[in-house]
Length: 383
Image 1 (cartoon, rainbow, N blue to C red):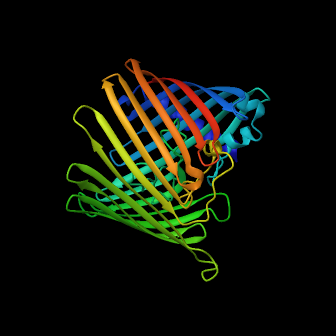
Image 2 (cartoon, helix red, strand yellow):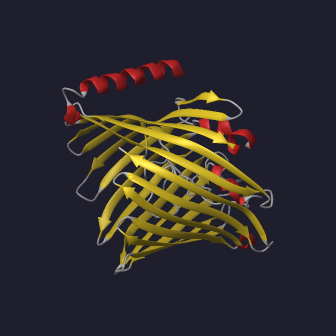
Image 3 (cartoon, rainbow, N blue to C red):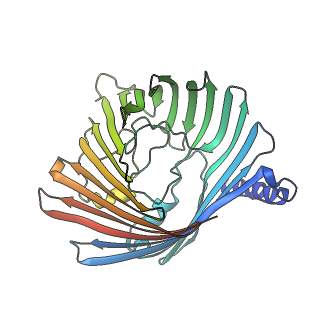
């Protein structure tokens, strides 16, 4: 099956490249190359581990007519270092593809080197008047909040995986009908390989005053789901929120319903300082992991965005010059007084060439424990 899919995709790429000569306005090729170095202190901060990976992405967009768009996006990553050698199951984690079709390949998998290629977008989009149809692997983004998105039931992403800006996609069918400039009805369905990995949901979005408001409802794996979200302003302050309620449909009377909700405010000052604060509450029986550092390599769900009942997020961002910026993000939970600190600075060397340094530190102040410290140095060239 993988070989057949790969053959068809290579034919698509070849056709697109040959079509570039005659239809340059209809083929768009973009992407980037990144080199990221990770340094981590583990085992009570006595052991320093390092891992390096090269990350290449190609984004192909082919537009044969004004109504049809075809997209193919491929990410390839070459890992070497301590994670490859010492992380049990690292290659399986990197290569996992929960879509209906497995489009992830470990091309090289040895004790020292792992090379993986993954197709995370392959879709056809058709628009006609107020109708919009999309078939294939795509990102269905229903989130409205800034840090945590309980409404983002199709493509939940990990807040700590900062290097994956595009975020995961779903093998799905999506239909949108626009009722006006600021309102629409949307229905989408997703199917994965696992028996229970099925989502069918609808969304209605409208604008009321200065607020964008949405309502969602449908089936999420083993639950009925209903939710709402909003994004607007309180004077000059941004005000956003989402809530989603999950009700098991197989054992309604014996199961625990789950509420996941988040609210955020954000404000930009005149001298380039930006502040964003958010609070997340989930009623599921979450318990903090023994090592918060494992959150970096954890697959999350809309029901379980953090391993705590309450979480708070605060971020300060400052653009010191047009080419130099910095951010400081912190997450706090009353559970063991857990604190996560994420500082980051970025510098644009020349056009399309950037370097940034990001840290991630995990603490439990109730037990006076440092659970892990990591630093990431990344160089990115975009084309």
